[in-house]
Image (cartoon, rainbow over all chains, first blue to last red; front, side):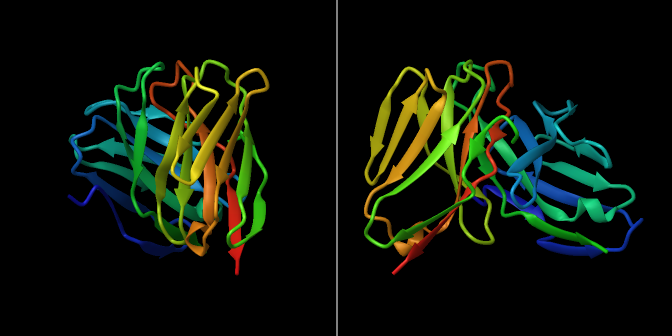
Length: 117
Length: 112
């Protein structure tokens, strides 16, 4: 089992270009997440999908869109990249019911390192 | 991660104990987690503690929880060079539907 895979691993864009970051999981989990990681700021949630067919905004959604293509795949799109979107992007899936009083473990992909010039 | 606070850096000598501290704000969090991120990799769950526990021990790892002060700590005994990484604490508030709120991460550097 590959777990959570992300493509590409590295990407350099020019301001205004668009691209889609791909994420796939073979763990059969319902919920998936996109985070960005910036130095000194930890991980911030961009969007999440509690189940196939649903998506919701997280803490920092501006400038991004997502698609939950099926249970396995959750993509993140930058329509017009900006230098402020230079970051490391992580996708994750959740083992657990997502209930507040339950154990919820997130599994992370290896990340995509994006630079916007 | 503004609601979860951690110190950003810890230097420790190989063989010593490391203690990483974290404060959180949401008392509704039933579980609290510690994740480890090695260089160039994603995060991996290291350990967790249920909120009705004060302490949890797992081999070289000891988690202490003070609910009154909303303080969480991770102690690594006999720290090894392979423990060099960034450590994140995270809370999952009751109404968050599985979403995690992360601290900024503590970079641990182990020196020989």
